[in-house]
Image (cartoon, rainbow, N blue to C red; front, side, top):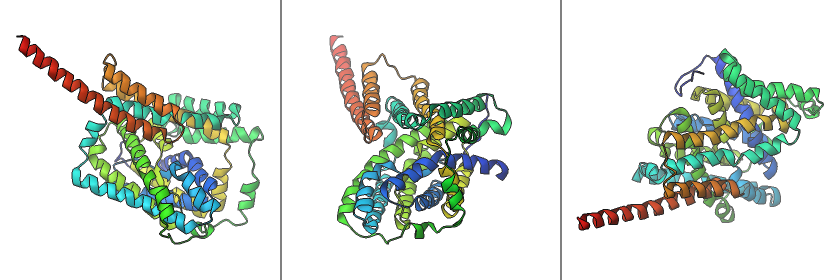
Length: 413
């Protein structure tokens, strides 16, 4: 059985750096895709994700091994204000407002506590929510793999074989080795365009903020109205990710360091991204998948990934090299990563011994799965919200029915 590396364990740099690079590969594609679609600077997005992750780790006491990358929830609003209206300052005002909403929620949780979360989200809700976090992402993985199924299948096969049969340190970096193998295979297949990489050496170093034509955030009520409410969506998604991490690492992160600290860390990281000129950041399922595959949970490795991302944001050839990795290579890897998250949700249900002969449990799980997989926009958030409300309503009805039946039984005696 593969041994695990705990959250607080610190590996030597010779091992921590490759593990950090592995996390960078996992988050890179999605993190730079958001600025590409919205008109922001990819270099600034990398800088924001690295700095934001360090802020998050510090505020959670290095007890939550999560990497923060560009959030997809804000693509529509950012596109309107940056790409269409060319009002970067207004867009960044909206991003800052998102961070402030997180801070408000932190203050509310400090006031009322976080103990209610376990009551709101019991295993019958948490398990399906965790599962759909992974399963709802699988179409993205399959779409990436469809770019060239031969390359994706080769990459996936190498990653799986290394995960199962590799020995020693190679067993904990199967994602990194799988991507390298897939990249070499893609080069041999003539599927890698090295033009941008070659051209990048003419300007080896760039200033991320200057590259993004930085503007100070402006108070624009339209941008705030478009983005601030979406913070509710990403907070719910963060909650789901924390349940996944707790399941994978066998820890209760809702209690220690507390979900309030998670919310504050993400909020201040997003606020910082707005000041830099980057998109809002959020915890990444891709990196949670890396933890599930490797069973290396050390937050020191996440710190290494954040530092590497910051370095990447200044070094043009390194950005170009990572960006030249074909989508099919990343598709082969993410099929495994997202599938592992889905399996973690099923594991939650099994370990909690959720009784599916109980109609209430069956209905709650069924509705969460259906909405989480069926909806296109913010599926995890909507499925989570509906699942929580449905479980509360059905539980109240069940408790009342049991009380009536018990009273009737006593009266009959």
